Length: 240
Image 1: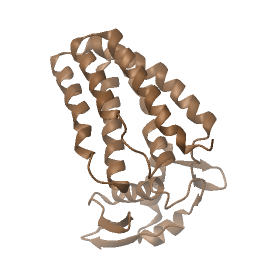
Image 2: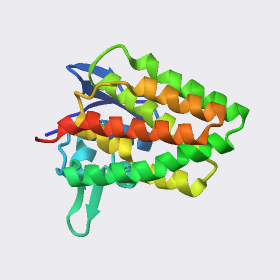
Image 3: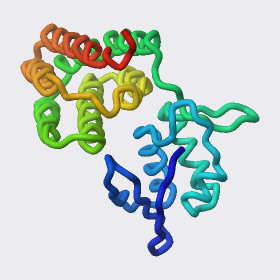
């Protein structure tokens, strides 16, 4: 079961969520945004278990808010793929990926993101190439530390790099298809809290270098190899 301590400051909810045995204040946002971030954290940390029913009224009482911002937050979480809404039964958190779903996710990523990297190498301008190189290097900033904070920060940077490659590809439809997979959110929940960064930083740099050089074949190959390695790093999450 989940728990959350909150305080209200000048009409805005301030959530204090447990992180790896410590507490830290959530960033102060608008009320709906704050409820969304608080619920997302609870789901990503498994404080609300995968497949667990989510009570709007119960969350509203816990957070000391009306049901409205909770409903709005859950609608956003549904679009993220983190909760499901069923008629007459309300919301439940989505189950973790099965091995079959995991394999299918990476099949789609290999198709879409390899194509995105290839297109990015051919379409990127000088400014976009610079941004891709900087994003690839940014992942190094979270090499220190452990637990949820490090993993969440690394996941966010990893997702941002992949989104940027999709953006630079110049195909809005391709980018939207990649975003709709919500792959980083699902993999974070699947492998939390033991996922390591592995060789991700070096792999990102190889992709970025190929894009910066305008080498479409090398970019596609580097992305393909990166995704295969990422898949292999997540396999221990499943029983042998």
